[in-house]
Image 1 (cartoon, rainbow over the protein chains, first blue to last red):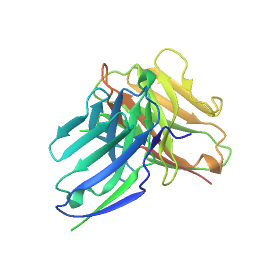
Image 2: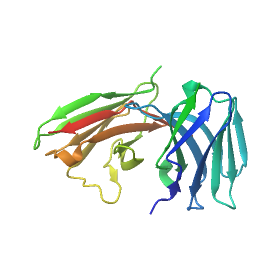
Image 3: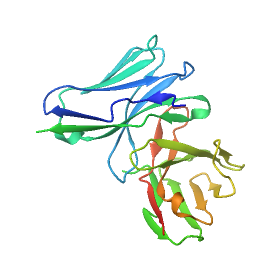
Length: 111
Length: 115
């Protein structure tokens, strides 16, 4: 049973526009949510995170929104750049510092 | 620069042999490291938590006798895939959590192919 779901396998966006990646979760005990970016044959790199007590966190072009009542979070990238093209994983932290990952969304930013 | 390294980056082995993968924390000491595997077009699945000075903790469904983990020092954890089979072919990634932080730093991964 997937506790973290990314229902969109892929997303294509024009350069300069906004990219919105979505993530849903089922476990209300998760206390932190993280977004990782991954290129093929490489390990994930940390992008941005949000505590479960917050509803928004912003870092440059990246903003993560958390809707606890809906158990939903989203990553906004604006403006999108071709270098943003990668697989984006949503992850949630549970006990023991373990991370539970979603299946990932492939983002393609077209120039 | 890299915070976590893995060696080898790619390995091909024959069925029945064993393969050792190393994970090193370069910037800080780590009493805990995590081992994940990723199948093509799928998510990262946590296999086990490597604990320095004690036994590893395995996730449900992961065979501890097949995937041997040794946390030899505060900067090194190894994963040995014993008696490898083609279905063990996967991308194995380790991560190191920062102390007092929810962040994890991931290694570059090891592509294992069992023929």
